[in-house]
Structures are given as structure tokens and as C-alpha cells.
Length: 153
Image (cartoon, rainbow, N blue to C red):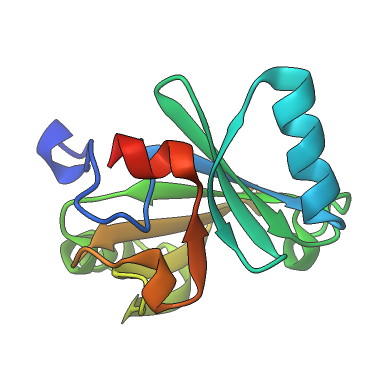
């Protein structure tokens, strides 16, 4: 079983929310979903990424609303995935690979300051493991921080 220090607890990257575990929920209409999540449940927009992805904060937690069908139960059309922040994504990938995990992608560094890989579990749930490798100003890659998120940074 992994030890606690393997997982990240805060973000050194403005492009990434601080929680360790971040659900990614798929919706056919992200702007409408965000409006409902904020209105119904008290989420606050943190970061908008075009019209296809919005990070939302609530208390000490976060969720991502992302473009997708959002109602399928097949693996290729999952209605959600889970993002987990780790300290060393390459070491985590190596452990998962050695244990026989079904890997969807190898660790890749993205312009938004995260290095990530994805895998799928036996239930068809997609997991993305992410390491902040640099602080990335969201405006440098097309993201838009909401004013309330800027004051938290």
C-alpha cells in the first residue's frame, strides 16, 4: 500500500486545484452544468478552459466539469474520471505498470504545468495521476482564472 508522502496535498501550480483527489464529471453542456452546480450546490468557478472544461471549488474540495456525453456506462464513453495528485508521477507510473495496471497513456508533460498519465481499473473507471511540475499562469495556455480563485492564489 502506498505511503502518505506519495500524494500531493497542495498545488504549486495556479492551473491546478489543491485537493489530492479531484472528480472529473462529464456533461454534454458544460456551461449549463456549471450554472446548475453553482446554483444548486454552492460550487464556485475557479478556472475556465474554453467552453469545454471548468474547475469548481467547494470548501476544501474541487471538481472539474468537462465536455463529454455524461450519461454512458461504457468504458470508452465514461461519465466521469478521477484525478489524483501525486508527488512523483513517473515513480507512480512505474509502480502501477509493475503491478499490472491497464495503462491508457504514459507520463506526459502538458503546457498547463502538469505531468500526467492515465489508467483504467477493473470497473472501467478512468484514473489520471498528475504531478505539478511548474507553476503555470492559466492565461499563458488559454485558461481564465475567476477573480475569487486569483485572490486564493
